[in-house]
Length: 226
Ligand SMILES: Nc1ncnc2c1ncn2[C@@H]1O[C@H](COP(=O)(O)OP(=O)(O)O)[C@@H](O)[C@H]1O
Ligand SMILES: [Mg+2]
Image 1 (cartoon, protein in one colour):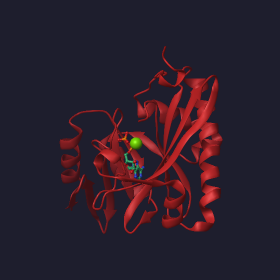
Image 2 (tube, rainbow, N blue to C red):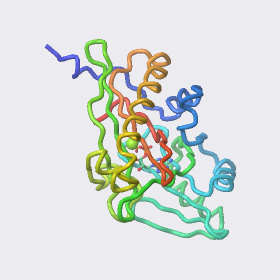
Image 3 (cartoon, rainbow, N blue to C red):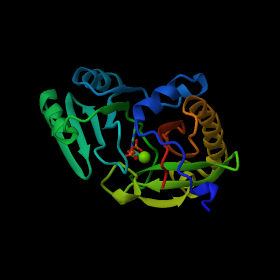
Image 4 (cartoon, rainbow, N blue to C red):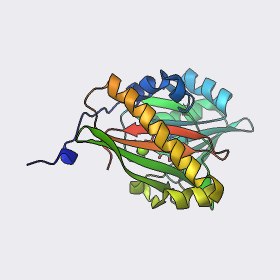
């Protein structure tokens, strides 16, 4: 017999649908980086507004196709995998993005200035699973990007450490318990919202970024967490 924990539960591939649902809740919206569907004039506007943006596939996983772009001294810096380029003209930047995007639907999100450990960005994965009718925390871990990368995904060379160790090293030992607690609280609130909107979800993997000021951001919610 299949254990309840083995049931996949409802899956939602679209980061856009999940993000839009989360933006509707006043307690959650402030923790979602402003996000829009990709378009060239939106990209330009969001770069002007936020300075740094991340563009990523609406249906993506494992850090695939994720690009970070920043406006710097009138030029545009572009980071994809371990590649770094500077473009003086927006049209050249756009060509580079479109070569990666290949016509697929993409999101543009405000870039979060993630706290780092020795120059490597860190984020957190919180796994929350419904089992026997009850939601339970399964794990909370930190993931540090491989040197030279900005994505923390393990399949892109990111490395795991405990959330406590990650918080301690990237922010301060004083904030460990408070930030873990805040991530749990956000997970509960966001999950009740998602479950109402998408009945049947039962396995969620939250990617939390914490910026250098200690502000917590939901970068994405996975319905098929590893
Ligand atoms: N808005 C953002 N600001 C900064 N880094 C981000 C942002 N969005 C994603 N990232 C980085 O890229 C990684 C992959 O993005 P994510 O949205 O989780 O997509 P995927 O489904 O590919 O894992 C994140 O774990 C994080 O390291
Ligand atoms: Mg992710």
